[in-house]
Image 1 (tube, rainbow, N blue to C red):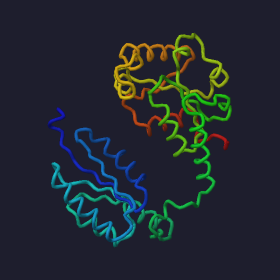
Image 2: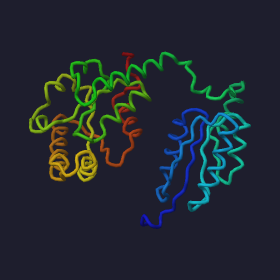
Image 3: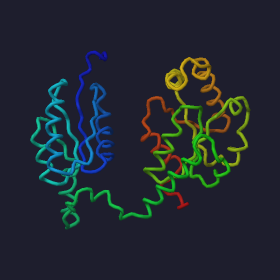
Image 4: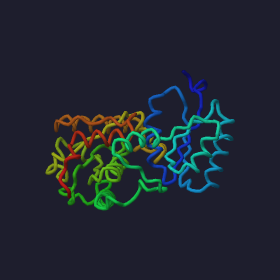
Amino acid sequence: MSNATIPRRAVFCVSDHTGVTVEALARSILARFEDVDWVYLVRSFVDTDAKAATVAKEIVRIGGRLDDRPIVFTTLINKNLEKYVDSADALVLNTFSAFLPALSEELGSLPSRDIGSFHGMSDSKGYQRRLDAVDFTLSTDDGVNVHHYDRANVVVIGVSRCGKTPTCLYLAMHYGVWAANYPLTEEDLVSPRLSSALAGHIDRLYGLTIDPVRLHQIRQQRRPDSPYASLDRCRSDVERAERLFKTIGMTPTDTTATSVEEISARIVKSMKLGDRPKV
């Protein structure tokens, strides 16, 4: 199907809080439907009647401009707010209502109806662990402070612009993983062995690779028409990096068409980070 014939459809992600959870769920589900051009619209902190009514009007207005009626994913728990969204001409999917009744029956208790209550700070230790992980990831980004690698749960390696930084930040924010990243430089790529910064941490290393053409496109956005962004340079960098991975017995994850969420999940599973000791 050509791009000209792919239908565009609006997806509203409506939340009384940040909207991060409902957007992630919507994207995960709709990724299975590749023949639609999804247009994501996140509407967060919808916590008053006025805001809910405004969103409902927008759903109707946007729906009239695209090919079909919008799809709405919502985590609104307040019934008074939810009724505004339900009144719009859209497919409304309340992700909580699909699970809460069954859980309530199983647990023998009623769920809280407080706005934003599921984002509470009841797990203060877990929250602090994620904050500490983010701080560590930022302090070791792009090969900085390699002397702290002995504290890392994982050190993500790969050529420049292959997705190391967003992956490490996602690992820190969502899993509380202490993730550092190290860019394979020209010096690293011409050497037949690992750099001294990495050699002592072989059990913590995880490699990422990428299609050279895609890498060329990404680098072009950062440094247009530079030697660094040339297709030949990208091909050479990827080829030499993959040769290095093979030398140390590592199978890298290809980030070309893989989401940060999936890359991170693979790292957690492969490195057994779900069972890691608390740092």
